[in-house]
Image (cartoon, rainbow, N blue to C red; front, side, top):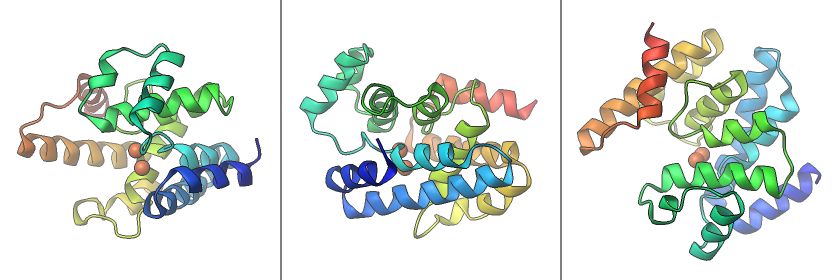
Amino acid sequence: MDIETIKGELKKSLSPKRYNHSILVAEEAKSLAKHYHINEDKAYLAGLIHDVAKELTEEENIYWIEKGKLSKNLENKENINIKHADIGAVIAKEKYNLDDDICNAIKYHTIGNKNMDLLAKIIYIADKIGREKIPEALKPVKELAYQNINKALLYCLEKQKIRLKEKGIKIHDDTEELLKELQK
Ligand SMILES: [Fe+2]
Ligand SMILES: [Fe+2]
């Protein structure tokens, strides 16, 4: 499927605000990929569809959960952040037939994972800074991302940990593992 067709589909399935965010993430991911000498087209594509599952109906969620043989727990998962990343990765594979590195980047874009490759790190960061208004706490990330991607990632994760703690939510084990890895 060509990029314009994918954009057309996303435009139909996402709110204008989220579609716009997807374009910004794709552009930022492409720019970071260029900076770090990895495939720019892949980065653009991964950025473009990273939130493909964010606004699905419950029926659509169930369809993809079954199709991707994902844990049934996901169906009831209140944490939409984790759910849309896992389902998005299934859609990237099953519907768009994209490479595993793109699917993994989508899968890891909210909670992270210690197995993240450079593309996955780029998508994680691009998601944070590909916004009309970058939240105050994440302002330093953009500059940091072009200096040292691991430092930028660590910065985001530490902020996330603080934010979750304030809300009384325990950080996901995968995030904690990645955090420990980056702190070494
Ligand atoms: Fe997302
Ligand atoms: Fe996003």
